[in-house]
Image 1 (cartoon, rainbow, N blue to C red):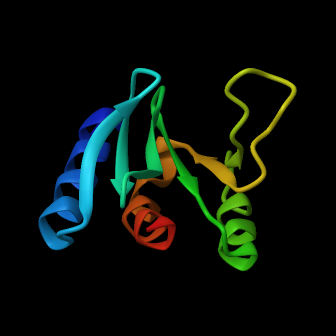
Image 2 (image 1 turned 120 degrees about the vertical axis):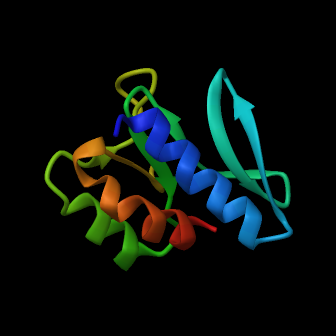
Length: 99
């Protein structure tokens, strides 16, 4: 399953289980929002997560190929982690953590 299909599956599941979760777009990127704030999204063929808990963020960064989200190059976003599609089995848990 490609990244977009896996993202759509996870996003739909989260929205169905949480009344305050909505799907949207930001800068052309499909996103998952809670209370109007983006918590995760699809970036190229990977998923990005805003992980405010340092332990959870470090666990995500420990996944092979994961890295800090740096969409413009040279300014990585402190709390955001990109997790490649090769770890899409971890996406549902990380999306919950990001909420």
